[in-house]
Image (cartoon, rainbow over all chains, first blue to last red; front, top):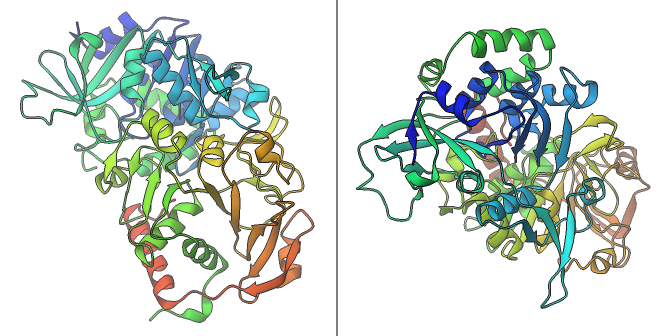
Length: 281
Length: 262
């Protein structure tokens, strides 16, 4: 049963040191507010799973929360590289991190296998690709019917998944719409899940019957955080803050600038700051 | 009035790439240069082309170029938007995509692409973003088009990492790995159009853009370039093509506050 909580309570109860955790969102609906709360609470030794780590994992890695990152595209979308993540990989600042790299198809299949309760994902992939030479978790199986060799990777089964969504109703059912990415699979694959939402409404009676809904009994905790995806966007509420992504390229290029930015924008403020950041977007 | 005589090499590259697409194509659009080409095609000779971005948007028709592959406008203008697992399983792996359109940081003469690392994988000189959807786009789409600007550090004798497989070591290497799709069939650069030799699969220059010399092509290419016996000149952009591209870029810059879009 979904509990309605503050972000501070939801993170304190659901995210522990050493957890395997996914903060998902494919460009859209990225749970920035929840990640910032994890930074404030100083979680450590996390294994971070995400298809596209982007700037939210750059921030967590830069603050030393991660010991390992499992990913398929580590870039600042439309801008360039992830500078904090590179500093951790290349110079161990502020600590060294392990990486486990996949393709998008592989990560998406691994979440789906996790949601389906399977131990591994099977798909046609990685043919001729270099990743299978450097990642021992990319293996193969032979189809027992046709003899075709297929790629196999372990299912993602995070301890906890964090996602952001448009709205929840009073019962705790959650509506996700627009570019829905792998959020449904991440929540169903995880042991616990925290969903931040733009809005809490009385009921969903007037919605289309085939929309992406997470029933309340699949969600551990719901938190009302307007603007909680910023600088990502929430379809129907506010647009992507492209300027913030460009600005991140400069902030993240310098360790001192980065630390000062985190202090001012994460450590010294709370989730209520997000509503103001999306005004006018 | 569009000045037709002073188009840039980049504009020629985008327009030549756009011309390679047809109305019947279902095209998986990679980030970077491919996106501009695909949308110019849609806005000129191929209005019914299906453009798919890996964020799950199928049949999208953005008015401006997206800054990221998951911009809201891609979803708002799409015929349908599916989840990312569905995109990669039913649509890409299912064999429903006719053309995968990729860019490259490093490319070799057989169309193998590296966007993962420069240097050793475990001790990289430069850690690039990685493959994203490319490894399976390269093997599951019926054929692959590649577009990039020519430079010796991009078009190299030997790539540092096989992010996505082209023709491997050439010949029938794809078949030997059980890959049933055609792989790279076209390379469009800012200087020339290249196609793989039918036997060796090595990229061969089949057409040079106006004003480009063989020396210029060779100076900007890290392997010994081969030229077709029937070398042609790429027709320069038409007024419609150039106007469409420039207007698309102007709308994009305005929408993204000076950033060009991908």
